[in-house]
Amino acid sequence: MTLEKIKDLLHGSERFVLHMVSGRVFDIPHPDFVALSRSETYLIISGERDRVECVRINQIESVDTAATNDD
Image (cartoon, rainbow, N blue to C red):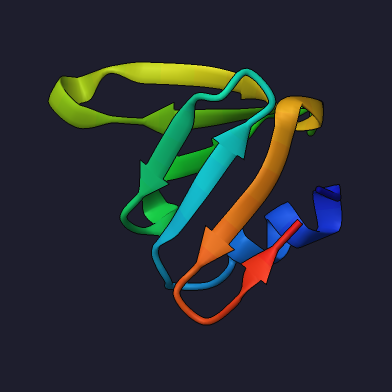
């Protein structure tokens, strides 16, 4: 998963699902629920009940979108 692909997803308006190398899965209902850190090494995800998760971009294994499946 490249940084450019992540940036493209964040500038879109579609739901997507992040699959981490650890096996964790994050369902992102809209890109507004995700922010890119200033260093561009982390994604900050706003989840249910105002829970916030920080994940390293290099730990994202793949992303599923409504239109396609990207690796």
